[in-house]
Image (cartoon, rainbow, N blue to C red):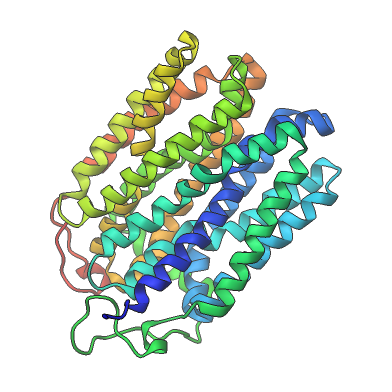
Length: 424
């Protein structure tokens, strides 16, 4: 019987680690109304805390990538999961708005930073020589798998018991994942006496631990990337990606549905339903990114997402579950499908060694967009008593994003980054 390559075991551990972090991140959507009811806090204040979390975990991306180079993959995953576990545990003692900002804004935001920013491309680049696009697609899809499995469960628990019981379930899952990382995670293929999956012969591999200043590494990479037009086009399009996904849909979709009279469990189930199709769409996107022009993939992803967001208010106004299911399928297929082609272009433009940290900066732009939508959505609701304008604007921005990515040149060398010449 042929042994399973350890790269796939690493992929599975990373997959479930991202699922747990994704559960924590996506659960904010089901906590907005319970926190309003429990503490009497204003929705814009609650949205601000979640916006801080989105922004911080995105901003931390390039520094997390540099820290992985310095401390090693396993230590950073242990540190990240421990931080998440600490934040979740402190939620039980939360009583004031500033505590919400500190716990869900800062602690949980930084804890998510390891898993939801650069971990997918780092694992794919270091543990896979072949099937990198597929590996990125699978790992990226895992952020949606968490909400697929647990958002309706969390909503049912909140509706029948309390949001604290839901927090308890998330805490137990985080603890289990921390133990698995401690027992089975490895830094590089060399630690198990293997080459990356699909590699033949002896290949060059960067050391697992480097004695360098991670802050200096992050800012040097930003300085190098800032002179490249493709960096700004990817960053701008990814800003729009974050604005139209985790910032708006992930934070406010459930509350938007509730404002039209849908029960919280139904709304959470629709979001969960998106997760099913996101798992399919993002994995397929990873497979496609190995085979087709990544610019055109992104063009269609952003364009179709924009159209679906513009149509969502009409579907909610009609109030028919069939239209909402169609939206959930359509939007779900496209939710995080943009990530594999963006990572692929980043790797091709900036080279294998530098792309991890530079993608971290691109992802920071993604989360800046998410933070704008998370807070902006709450602010729009406060002013207009409706989210409709927020969803219309997000749809228009997506159409603009589709134009940004098509401006990237078809052939772009990484020679300015002192790497091998590659083609998109």
